[in-house]
Length: 170
Image 1 (cartoon, one colour):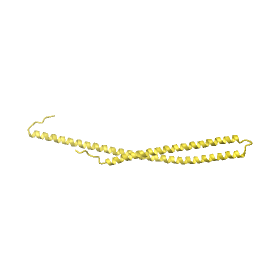
Image 2: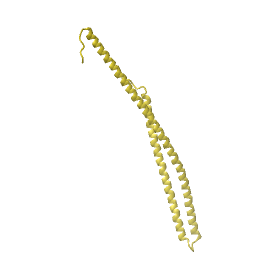
Image 3: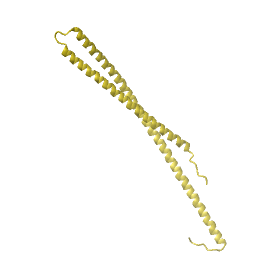
Image 4: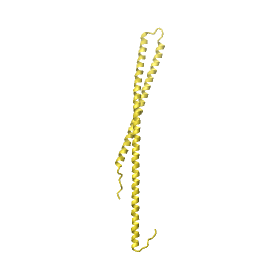
């Protein structure tokens, strides 16, 4: 007897592919999130370095700017400190923009995770359906074999009865 073929096998293969794609998308989203967080940390370190320099040069300016200092020296320090403050503000803006990118990446990870979970559920449902189908086919095959054996036993019994043989208990 030809073995029955699962008629939804193509759909099962599609569900397996969807799960694989969702898994890959989740991995990419997690990687993008990690990169966004890493860039944010880098920007924060750069900002902290600017703040450190600003404090250092301000302290140095107060130490050197005493009686008898030239205004020219004071202007140089003030211009440099102003530039450091501008750099700090620029870094703050970059950090805020990066925080928005991190939030967007976190949302993307959430969506990808949801899609992956959904794909896993759908695949599990298809696998369960295939398993139930397989059990049903095996049960039908077993019943058919039992019927055929029972029929064969009845035919043997009838033949022996016609020939006058006594049935032997097995």
